[in-house]
Image 1: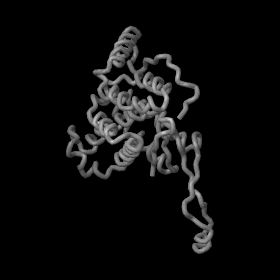
Image 2: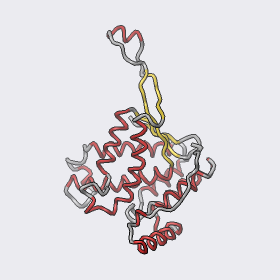
Image 3: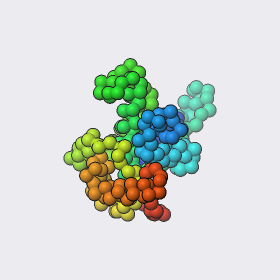
Image 4: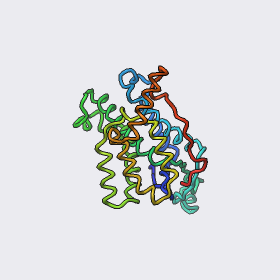
Length: 257
C-alpha cells in the first residue's frame, strides 16, 4: 500500500511504497496520460501539457523504486522462531522506496488525474458522459482507476492530518470545483513551486489553499492571466506550441523538505 505524508517543513509530500506498489502506480499513470505517442493524442491533445507534468512526477516515482531516491527497511513481523517452525529462511525486514514531490506540483497532478480519469471512464463505458458511468461494468473494477484513486486518496489524507477541519474542508471544496486543466498554462506551476519553496513552514501552510485556488480558478488569477498573454504572444511570434515555451526559472539548489 502506498503511503503519503507531508514533509517536515511542508515543502511537499513524501511517497513511500514497495516495488510492486510503485511499479503498479507508474503503469497506471502511463496508461492514462495523453502524450504525442499515444493513440489518444489526436483526439485529446489539449490534455498533453497537463499529462507532461503528471509524467514528471511519474519519473521520480519510477526512479524511486529503481533505488535512485531513498530506500527504507521496516520489520515485517517475521521472527527466527516462525522461520524455524515453517522451515524457511526469509528476510525479517521489507524494503520500501520513497521520493518527495513539491506540494503545488502534487496538487496539480491530483487535479489532472481527475480529468484524465474522466477520459478513461468515457472510453471504457463508450459514453461521452461521466456521471453514472462510474458504475459501468467496464469501469467500476478498472485497476488503473482504482490505483490512481488510491494515490489521490493518500495525498488528500496527508493534508487532512496537518490542516484544521475548516481549512481541509475549504481545500476539498476548491479541489471539487475546478475550471479544468486544459486551459491551465503549466509554466505557471514552476513559478508557484519556486515561490512556495522560498517560504518558511508557517507561510507554506497558509498558502496551500491560495495555491489550490490559483490552479482550480486560474481564469480569475491575474498572475496566470499575465503569463498566459506572454506565452501566447511568444508562441505566435515564434510559430511554436504554447506548451513548448519555457522560461528561465531557478529552483533552489537545496530544498528544506
